[in-house]
Image (cartoon, rainbow, N blue to C red; front, side):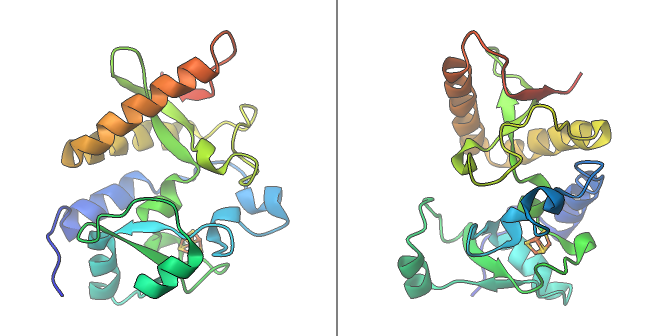
Length: 192
Ligand code: SF4
């Protein structure tokens, strides 16, 4: 079945290139007993853009095994899915990651974009949905590399031009973070 194209292969490759600098100068697996938390399908089932599945197949990489209705029901996955846009999938390679072929979620987790009071994307915050699970979430002493931070902010700005409804969601979530951390240090890595 053909799905609508939101991101061409060229656009995806541009995003992959933007998100190719190392997120940290250490391997996050060190903080989780040797295996990255987010690569283990017992913990996280990634939600991928259909465009990435198309790219994965056309490039002959075949990292991703997409999940079907019954499998998803059994797993009780919580995010709402737009089936023409996105699909849950598990990685066939973990923990031996083909790093150059990783998906966007692999290159961005556990961060999300942070928007200030003027609705400007000014940095990255954590995905607090996995707080207490991914050992990196909330750790302000573990700073992402400057190249990664800069490129990741550019990536989110460009991505959210394609998906403006998601931008509204992140603006709302950023406001919730300000409320939760009022009077404390914001869990934000600013792109100065
Ligand atoms: S592609 Fe790499 S980073 Fe992504 S889930 Fe698989 S092993 Fe983990």
